[in-house]
Amino acid sequence: MSQFEFTLTLFSILIAVIFGRLVSTLSSITSRTADYQHVGWLFVLLLNLLLSYWLFWESRNDATTFAEYVALLTTGGLLIYAVCLLTPSAVQDDWHGYFDGVRARFYMGYGGHFASDTLFEFLLHRDVSANWIPIGLCIFGALVPDKRAQWLTLSLFLLTFTLVYGRLIMQS
Image 1 (tube, helix red, strand yellow):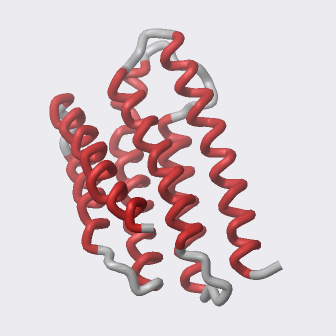
Image 2 (cartoon, rainbow, N blue to C red):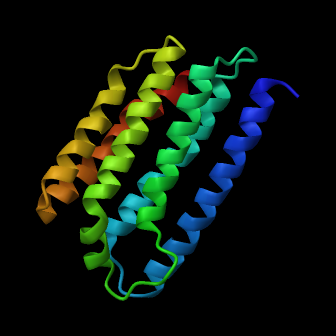
């Protein structure tokens, strides 16, 4: 088993766990009073999960360095942290209040995920200029508690995924 296959297996297990939590929380939220901002963030995380797996597959390299391996695991770990904050194990009665309570930690974990991903891409000698957009949006979302600003942050994340990461997928 090569280093890439070992890392891909570990990454696949992490993604399966995250995917299960996202889908179960989506069904829980939509069966009760829907908080559309929370549903939007779960959708963004689901897109990020699929894109992370795709981009990792595109970067397959049998000679993975230790720094790349640590950056990859940190990226996956911080994505799991962000997902776990938005997908509690117990069903919530007030999803609006729950999101407001974990908002700053979610944005910092999610921003850390993008910072670690930027390091991983940098180690692979790729262009990392687009990665600063989500990091800035996470800092903005963590610092500004206004509900309209939260919707703006979510909208800009969806726009970023559509324009930036859609371009990356079309090029591969």
